[in-house]
Length: 269
Image 1 (cartoon, rainbow, N blue to C red):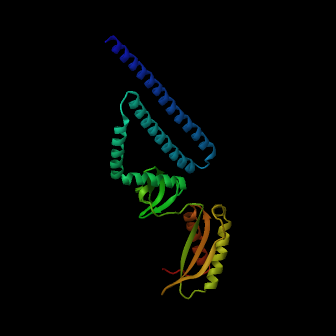
Image 2 (image 1 turned 60 degrees about the horizontal axis):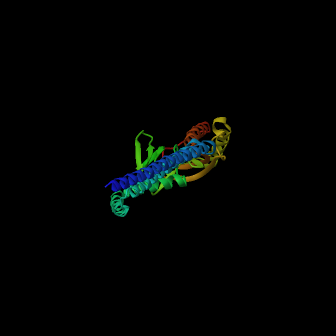
């Protein structure tokens, strides 16, 4: 009996020491993950540049930290079960069955997470971009791994699951284009109208408030469209990303003022 008690005591001590070592391993693993997060975060601040890019990379970093912590925790639990003498074979089998059931029931959630990772990795859009996804159009306020949050012009917040994003248009990536359509009354001298608009657009492009937003000189397209009561002239110009709406407002003002001064009637189309 004394021998049995002694053997049990040694076994308990042995298990305790292994669990203690395992605990140190867990602590070191979590500290290592946190240290790597700080190092990467510091590099992001120094090298990422614009805030939207830093936000995108920070989201990816957060996903990395959470995934690494979860994998470490699962590994530690399995090792602890092995240390105390529990056969983890049935546990792994049960976990596989449970994982399959969960994955089948959470396919939409998994698809959202995968879509979120692809959006961030491919840099499809960023916080602050103006995008259109199906019926939702507005400014991106936040991007998570599960959903993208878009605020439209009326102030409504659209929560778009990332897994549902199949086709997205980005109005503020790299460069934009301001397009202005003017309907002139039938019978106007189109050559004169185009000359007046070219002069007005040339002067407008030299204005300080306009010059910094443009990437080229405005182009005038006459006879762009025709109907029973008017003929359409189109003005278009490449602008810096996100500046197309401000440029269109200013060009519209310059164009209408120039046409009125030249006595060219504007029609209603």
